[in-house]
Length: 318
Image (cartoon, rainbow, N blue to C red; front, top):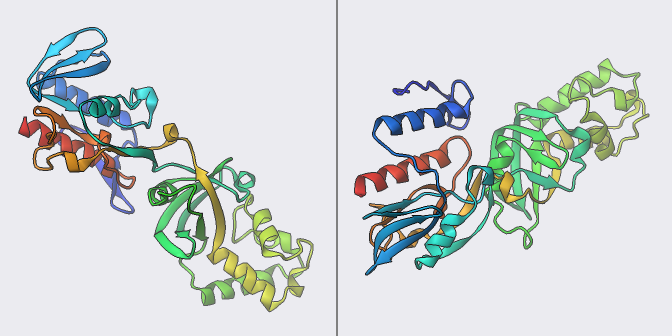
């Protein structure tokens, strides 16, 4: 903010620029760096040379730069268009570092549930619970989105960071479409709507409770015939519908590709890095910062904070 970028804090302590424009952050960082005398060399790093266990030079595809210290902050595998293509893992591994297997984190999810029929439907102020079997891995309230392949949005991205065993574990989501209403209050609401639309077909009675594209899916999952008159719906059928509003199921088939992820989980093992200085415990003069390390967090600025905090420590240390 002192550098001219006003910030705002949203639900879940997520901090963003007031403009909602990430370029404001990037442009400000570059401007501050240049004003501090930083020289930008836009070449690809291909190697880091060492002598007697100490960094001696950074080698690019065009030149070699003798130096006493290198900070390796090349990012992970997410957003490869930015140059974040995993080069840092290769270089760190060559220097003896362990690379924790990488995977997508904060990534949209593909679903077995027919989400394509609800493509583009955004849900606000809903509750999301992530299950692995019967075990709850994550629960939060906020926003999410149905897409042609499955689900996305802040709630889904955060939930995805808890899905670490695709292929071995089966994950499912449960959406509380009406978290502000307990079952008793929601049942009363359903009764009022059913009274209001008593002579309508069931398929035409949910317009006050759900989005247009979601209604056919709710009708199908409820098991209530779409043409059944509302005034003939039984108490048991109504309770089945109520449960659907409180526990809308989405079966997850897997994550989207890592190049669609916000952040990469895995990377350089942090046990091989001094947390007080960010210097390698294996190579003197080699420092790390940001996503190249095995560090990741929820969406909302926390991964940026990891990048900036580790860079701050590395810069002060060297």
